[in-house]
Image 1: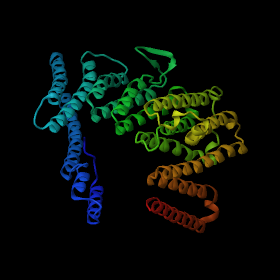
Image 2: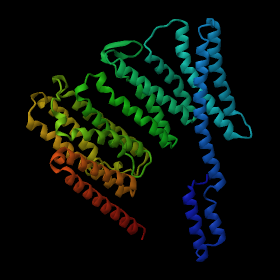
Image 3: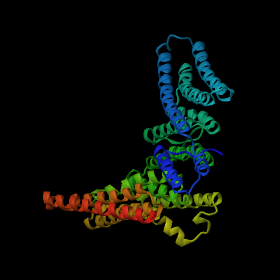
Length: 470
């Protein structure tokens, strides 16, 4: 059985407690040693940390070496004949991958060292493969749409990332795909969708990206790798956020971005309570959705904002359709993986209890999209009040949701984030509504009230911890 990991602080606490229990005759020396044997030794912990540090340093070094190699070849590139160029390209790519396979599957003494060297060689080989795409095109004077090169680059690296169990290649895949999506949808939104040719009647939305990202996500869940999930979640969010550019929804983009954040929160709440896989969805969902609420909470934001008629109903329908489909599919998958999940017994009450904030944000973004399309171009003062009030109510509800989440899971970070978000809302509303009227005395009162609130929250959290551990 693999030994459990401990931080240095946890090990010191455990050793002190075991010694105290042994002094009180609650444990024998054999029992004490048996408990300690369940956890890794300090030397093993130090070796693991050293290995992680070496992996990071070697990865950065490999990236720099790869860049230096490319610059060196590029400096003498024009002076080389085409056959020599091709020989160098295939030799470097093939040699690096052959070395990586040899190091990975050889049976040497230092398995950890050979595995690290193998991952570095695979990483360098994947970088060389990406460079080879553009270099070969240059040799044969092939003029093509340059973002396509990133697509072919990712296509070649994804199988290695899925088969070799290495975080480094997943990171490279995500970086290449994010560059491809950004290049296509920001630089060429006017082009039609691409599928071995341009389809002018289809917006350029990079629709093959889920085919790259979903296998990586499934791999991460099956291998129990929450950190890898944290790579692919922002990639999917980036792809969704850029969709309005391809579909000509620029005027409604802020509402669509807010709905993407709500969608991420919705998926996070489909996980069972306390799951580490929910953290990436929750983190980026909070950053996106709660960040969008900040400008929406200002009354002046809605002045002069309007949407064309063709955007009146389509964006809200897309928001609801994507949100509902994601909820259904992900909930069904989670139920299959974990029969004890609360969603294993479908209930409208359970669904509303867990998803009231994400669903509320989806409703809010869809309503604001419709409201902007209906009244934005009329420039009515009264019409701007309603969305601003709703956005402020959503900020307060979001702060309450974060604090409730921290209390429910007994975690300090979400609770503190909820408190900070509520204080941010308070300061923004003071600046927005009473800044000119209150002056310095009003600001002093505002900061005093915020400080008093923080003292009260800190006392409450400390008291709650004492009661839980009593």
